[in-house]
Length: 463
Image 1 (cartoon, rainbow, N blue to C red):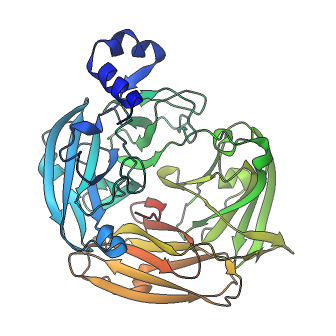
Image 2 (cartoon, rainbow, N blue to C red):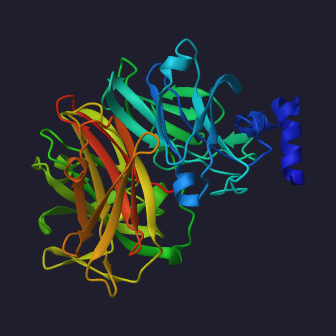
Image 3 (cartoon, helix red, strand yellow):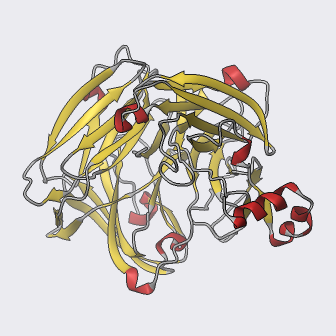
């Protein structure tokens, strides 16, 4: 423990915080040191908590990806106003996936965040950085068996004792629709309900949109501003998939705090069967949020790919925020695409292999009306005419299914419906892990229910 951290701990525990730090718009964060077993090898993550509507989905990737074959202790902490209100402990078996309805354990208690902790002597110190970072999912429920939004956990290091208000990117709301609120939920255990926009300084955390009944409809984490140098400027092309849902009309988000470019000439493309069906160029000044129908001046029939081409300082992300018949749904950042516009089509840039691919995403199959998609962003790889991706489905302990898909370089995005890859009839939930020795492919998981007009989505993640 360094001197700086020791000083922070002293200030945190004494009146010095109230007399010195609060003048600088700092607030206290939950101290990781309060967790049990914090001095032993452990990894930690946190997600927002909505009372009665929060599930935790966890996958023991340490057994599959890091050869830890023993059971691992999993602690779930309910945090309210910087205090541990309740704790649930259980064991995770090798490769096991658990979906935990927190209402069954914390139903009579209030809280703001959930902290998940894996403990094992075999976990390496500082796994994934931030004194040990653990990826799991907070999954939010609209009604029984109707998931409406999902988000991966964020790290909590031992040094994160204070938070300062800053201009974070991805900080936006739907103020034009009075049926929605944005809730910003912080690592401190404090929950603020505000009408936020990208011009306000906020504490780092998650934004969560609800309706008037407090049903969560979308959740995502904020990001630091782009402070790269001007010589990092480059043109990027990013895409996302818009599935075949009547009334689907997503928003596209481009934030200059994330790109580092305040005035941007952005080009938008509707791509179907790898042909550009519509294109539009828009001069963007400052923050941009617009429905696809407003971008192109008309409704676009669903089942297409949307692309945006713009300038960025280094890699940054544009975002797609799904909406069906004006109903706000979940959102995810778009993925970089190493393709270029040629003769009204997308043609691939030849890429040299960059690492392998092993990343995963949680799916829920209880509602049989729900469609579950893997969206893989394809690349053309030098000396590889065809690429192979292993798709593994893990569920309860000792359950695994495997399918291997083969892809060429004809289409920039590959969409796979899990029902076409696996028999899901008797499976309630699971984690899908994609693996490839050919390239580190970007991927998104997306589930939708046409009848209920719900979409939940997030990108695949490593662990």
